[in-house]
Amino acid sequence: MNLWDQRYAHAGYFYGRDPNDFLREHVTKIPREGSVLCLGEGEGRNAVFLAGLGYDVEALDQSSVGLGKARMLAEANSVHIRTAVTNLDGYRFEGDRWDGIVSIWCHLPAAMRGPLHRQIFAGLKPGGIFLLEAYTPDQLRHGTGGPKDRDLLPSLAEVSRDLAGMEIVIGVERERVVQEGAGHSGLSAVVQIAARRPVLCR
Ligand SMILES: C[S@@+](CC[C@H](N)C(=O)[O-])C[C@H]1O[C@@H](n2cnc3c(N)ncnc32)[C@H](O)[C@@H]1O
Image (cartoon, rainbow, N blue to C red; front, side, top):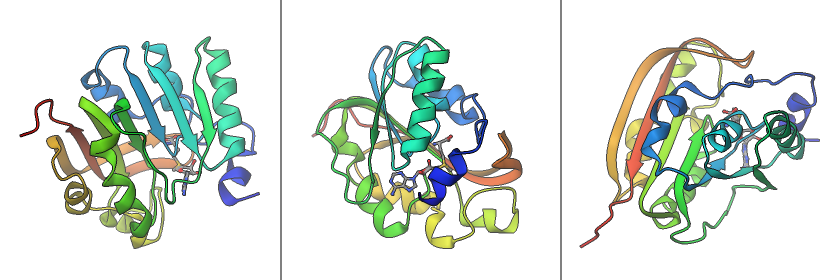
């Protein structure tokens, strides 16, 4: 059992059952009733929220325990999500497939994150939206959640660089209070991105 399986094996939902604040605020940017891929989705709170809004949702995570709880949460909310136990290391997106790709606190080593993010453009349909919230390196000073390893913490510049060709609709580093389950609690340094694959490419 890996660390995430062990964490999710406890009763309750580590990040709660409610969706992430940034996703909730900007979800309407994703084309209505479109297909959405959630990266590192864990116990499924964001996927279930999206499915409840009528999106066709697939959730990827390396943790079978987390995704098992995600399916239970979906059932409890009378929605359907697809789940796939997947290691994102070396993951290949299907081209022109998704109306939305969502990455919430999906902290990966830089050597894994770059190749993944550089495929976002191709994985989205034209007009599709990528939504990301993650802790930045400044979060190491806050100690209110997230990884303690700089390599897992992306800056806005790093994520933006990997989204070449995308229209950055929102791209900010900011501080905000995060209250998302026991795992994330308090004033935090985050990067938030909403990026659209342009409809017309010259
Ligand atoms: C901080 S949790 C966030 C979970 C969820 N996105 C949420 O907001 O509730 C990070 C998730 O990323 C997953 N993860 C980390 N590395 C991964 C990898 N290489 N492949 C797939 N999932 C990974 C973990 O299993 C964990 O569920």
